[in-house]
Image (cartoon, rainbow, N blue to C red; front, side, top):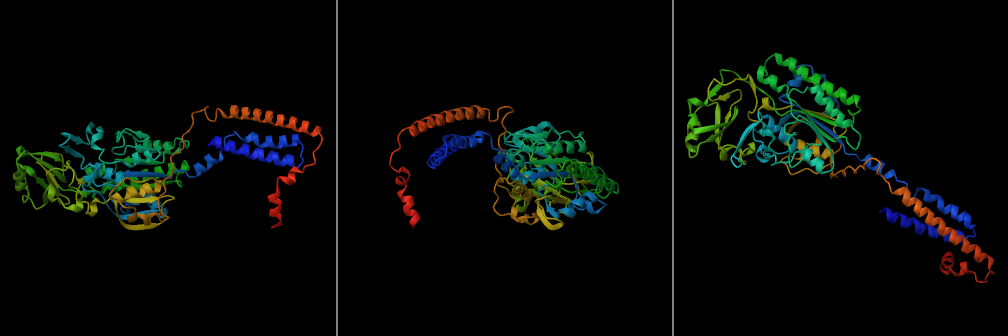
Length: 506
């Protein structure tokens, strides 16, 4: 393309030369006028790159406070959550994915898919095809095969030419579809929230050629405190206030970096928390022998893998055993749970009613709070607030589904979403500008290595300049020679333009 531009320049120079000479101007004056624009011919133009950077991809940061229930923000003063709500949006009811466990819902948030589709159906799983088990407590989480039934948003944005950063988000330190996030922190629960925030800010604040466009940030609280104390404990008030202070730290760091009004900030959670009681325990050993099945996932939604040929026997022993649990064969699980069509969902699934705990016997550990219950329960709903240039101000929406977040984020980031269970139309009222047709932002232009940009331009420009000067000198000598010869009577100027003269009479 650069060659075409140069050829066009030479055509125009030739035309200009002919015109100036015909008008009787000195050949030396003509030469000076023509050489003047040549100085910028091979100079790199910055206009195009500046225009490109003006259309930089929007920025988005997704933050999850694990186990932060929807009503915690009203329980104690939470000025930082309130600040986001006052300048942004809040959703009162978020229907998350069944089952309401940590890994399941965090993967739904970044894929827009229900568990049966993205394949992370629980925190503890067995895959009969792989003949392998998965546990969030073991290194099995780093086996890519568990994650590759879906494409997380950080892979999507990187394939579109953008960059991502992940601080401890479940699955973000796994090589999924042969790709890690551009920047990420391997999971380490001992790394403080403040350190995670500072790293995220560094990634967003890097030079344009290196800065991330999308980030995910995860923090384990208040989930751990909710399990240990129970959500109804008065001690949770201190924990909630502490989480709000953490959010305030993030906000201040964004402001210090000049990012607060540039980055779209979404603060949410994976699930809520329900209060348990030692008086509400269901012991499976009372109803069925352990010799007949394998216990795969734990309360309150338990996956049961019956031994070969024992499916009906185990089911019949459990189905009417206790009124505080519901027992399903896999094919009987209600369709609206979106928890049926995956080999990792066990042949028998037991769902405890709210507040009840399913154990094999009472010798196991007991928690005062838990999640994983039916996703229609209010106690299982997470918080959702957001602000930034893409969002409306001081707007409250009654409800949404967590799977709708994925197409919303893709729209904000101007990338084409993968197929999902979510719908942008369900959440478009959160946006400051109603979406029309999403035009993906082009990938970041490649950055030339230092010292190599336009390295041939000065040489090529100098060569072309010398050739052009020599050519004009030859023309000049010829013209001077011709002027010494007797002038001819033909008026070549008038003869060469009869059409122009006729046109002037029209």
